[in-house]
Length: 251
Length: 362
Ligand SMILES: Nc1ncnc2c1ncn2[C@@H]1O[C@H](COP(=O)(O)OP(=O)(O)OP(=O)(O)O)[C@@H](O)[C@H]1O
Ligand SMILES: [Mg+2]
Image 1 (cartoon, rainbow over the protein chains, first blue to last red):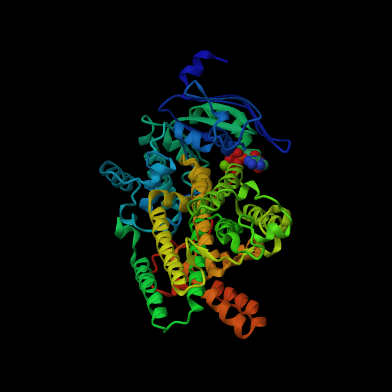
Image 2 (cartoon, rainbow over the protein chains, first blue to last red; image 1 turned 60 degrees about the vertical axis):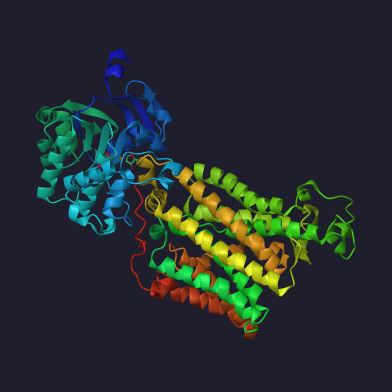
């Protein structure tokens, strides 16, 4: 293991394997992220993008390989709640918000705070928290919907609410799976801007199929294919790579 | 704080309960309410408490327990054991220590697990502790292994069924098939006297009100919001950093303790506790009460329990063969036409609606 990389990287995956019933969904995947970095991950359907996020967040255990957080924490031993507490926030491919809660309560539940049963039983929303909620609502443009049930939001608004919930957690790393799906062009570009704003203060991994969106992010791109990295670099660099072209066009 | 606990409907419910708490004993004392009705009403209130306890776990945390009758029955047995020991030498066989059924079985001394039950506080403690402990062990194993949905429901049925079979056995030491009965008095008060019965009714009413308040406090807290989050999207809740199993365990145990207390008040009012209380169908009945009354509302559950129990008492009197059909019809009609239960008829559409389960994809 490269000692320098492991200490420097916020997230470090090395030679990770995971198969489902003999199918190698993740096959020798290596991947590293610095604090504050913005990274796009692309790849055809079934390339293993979501599974990679599952592994990072402790939802899926790798068969073999190293998954290190902050150079020291072995993420393969942690579950979803642990990784969230370590500072990894995740937005799902299919937007998942708490439908029967108001928009405001969705954010309140996500807000960084003590997650224990006793603490929440007696919790009161502090002034600082209320102010932070206002801020987040404005940021995701849902201020006028704060009392509405999340179930009544449009698809795009749910995506934004979920991004808001991610930010409320104030994680060190955000894993954002296909945020632009179901959004209008305008919303898509606003989402790209939002993610660019977030990066720097937080590391962000964005999985996306929409190339316009990836271009708008203007960041380093990792191409996954059949469970491992096919190419990595700027968007121009990877799109010039004949293997990448073949993977995308050859299907 | 109080305004948080008492939303308009809960406030109305409390007012009605307060009126009953005073009204029933007064009317009975004045000869306007027949004696037999007092323990019957008390019994229905015990059912109502059990229903509220189930609604806490099912309506809010999405845990469909089909074994809550077991917690209720365990509480009932704990109190029954105390009442048996209170009989003392007044039993048929006149043994100062051993309950009649033990003398009949030729037992020479009290089994160890009957020790201490001569004390009322101890029995009351056990009525909470035993169901609570069972719920803790069961929940700890099930929730930690992430058993959910229909699988969880099935193992709760298995739990109550196993207890059902065990309590039938004479060797278990709980009176077998006949259970525990022929109680004489509690804390020196004659169980047959009108004033004791009125007292037990008042206690049941007070416990129901307290239960609703405690459950309201839980569901209106941030922890309550976490429970609803678990119900709607369990894995999303985990990814926010909440230990879902801890929250489930907390409400499950709390609910079991409440159910145990309800059982403890039930036994002296009906005068008997036997293994039939553990029957899987009894636990399913509790779910029907909650569904008919209105899931996820607490007071709807209480309403459903009383409505159905009253209907059962009445129909099994006039046309027993119709009861199961009537119950089935009621259940179907409510499901089809009153998705929010009977309580949904009473205004305020601000219930947490039940959206389709939106679970996180694999
Ligand atoms: N829990 C699982 N059980 C079985 N197979 C799985 C599981 N999770 C993922 N897979 C398989 O692993 C492969 C990679 O899936 P993954 O969801 O990671 O792809 P993806 O890159 O996110 O694709 P998409 O762009 O369609 O979202 C797929 O063939 C999928 O069927
Ligand atoms: Mg995916």
